Image 1 (tube, helix red, strand yellow):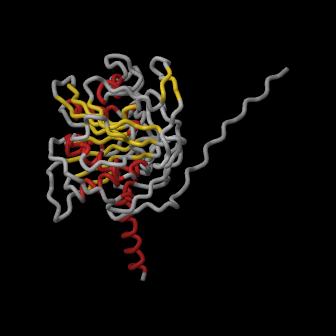
Image 2: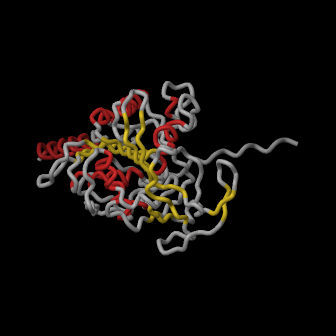
Image 3: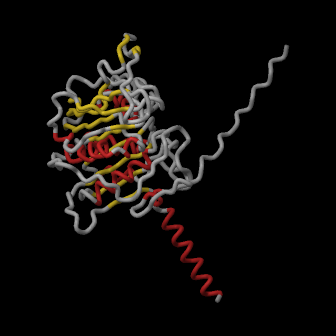
Length: 365
């Protein structure tokens, strides 16, 4: 009896160790699906828009339905739990060494130098980038760092930093009213026949439009119509707002801001990166079939592959993302909780309470 108990405990401990060792997710191509022979690396790491939920969902679709090997990387805490607020962490960054495409949903990251080196090396060898939502301000690196040029607020040698220089825009401001005015995607006149828009219709997101001004070499695919509310049926907003850039007033939809574009970026190593950027991409935005299809299409486009007439973007596992917002992510989860066949329940642990700041003692009279 004691031996049996010992064996059971040993097996349990072994399973726990194996589980703790999983710091990233790898989704291989299943039997019966034609493999594309390409590796998509998906980078999660933002405190607000639940990229740790969205990236596994997209990786499952890309691998199980379209034949791409996918690796999802996360920001982790010291115990191996997913922690979007750990801006220094990119566990499993060695996957970037074999990436054929990088899909990123990042915000204000300041990775360790070895991880930043891997990202820069991938960029310099011409790996395409697919950038969602806050990736326009993916990095916030101290000015005295060797990687300061990737920072959103660095002015030299890249004015505007990584977002403006590489993707086509950095953080400007919320153009729609945050959490009150949703986004309807409207196809840019002249882009209707673009391969990236095959099968894309009725794009809607419950996140707001960002103020954005892509460069002249960008091809705008969608503009974001600011809505009066948070429903796809809401009418377009008609109020006036001052632009952050020049303080001049305009109607929020006159014209509407760009929310999806492509460009070809000539990098410092003499290679070219295909870039697809969308300022949509909250996990709740990706409940929308049209937006999911646009993101899946961007992988085909970025690799120079034929974009399907209507890409299959059905969920592989149920997808029930939490609403965006700070400190609203599901806590105490590991990458394995988002593995193939797993569905994270809504009742996942709530965030721990914030430490209370001590009030300053009143000044003596």
